[in-house]
Image 1 (cartoon, helix red, strand yellow):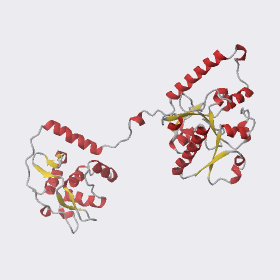
Image 2 (cartoon, helix red, strand yellow; image 1 turned 180 degrees about the horizontal axis):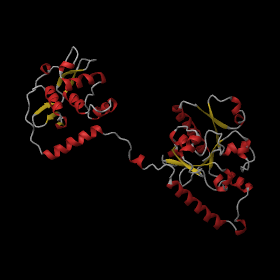
Image 3 (cartoon, rainbow, N blue to C red; image 1 turned 90 degrees about the horizontal axis):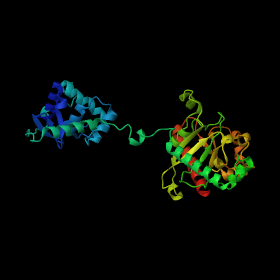
Image 4 (spheres, rainbow, N blue to C red; image 1 turned 135 degrees about the horizontal axis):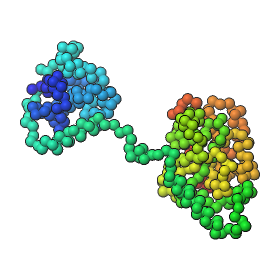
Length: 375
């Protein structure tokens, strides 16, 4: 009996679901058994090599899939996939017989014959479960894994807990060590002194959450609205698009960004992800908050640094690393002011979004080097 003739007969009767792969064999119900790798007269037009029976059966059972999905499913089952030009030839053979084929038809008489073998005796239920599971896995595609399902963007409760714990410990320590007359809100001069000799040691781990400052002005490229997409995902999304997507939910006070630093393990973080707190209101920072500021995205305007606890730009960019993000085709005049400062200029394209990741990685590399040097 010719296996392709049997396959075409099953297709005509609508019994393709009764064909089961069992190990190295293909079971046609309880009637026939053929080797899965048996060559057929169904040949590859390019190489001239015959497709095995497993490829023909898999195409017959999954011809409703898109070709890309079909190729992926076949490779998962370790079955040679049928090429796109050969699909129509074989499907015409299944549906209409060899008369619909061109000059080199698939004639059942040209197929090698295989004597039917008795179906091995085995427990039907376990084998059925195995075949059913294999059939389902052939059609499966992984959309999300457990890490993706557990990813709650904007709800970094671990960072919140670490920050609250750190603040409470500092409050208790300051209360125990400082005299009652000195327990008041620190002035700008005190904030500057705290920055010069920060109480919070700059090192990875131990609940230390570094702060990144971004401009609150809307005319800058990186704002509180799109900073997470740029730094975490490596994609620049215009701030106005992110504001529309938020549908009037209000401007966030701060945003948590996580990054697994390349040299974090050497710096004491065990190679894990470091959490950064992004803010755009420097006036709300206290002395201990300024000790945690490690980076700032600059607007290019002098007034951005008004009331900062530093005497000039030299001191600012010795304590904090600065970044100026611009479009690569913007005029040089736009960056004329910031070129006088000790900052890093990051250029991105207006249209080539695939280049954003390189720019974001450059930010992280520079920031990591700065933090390691100031640890």
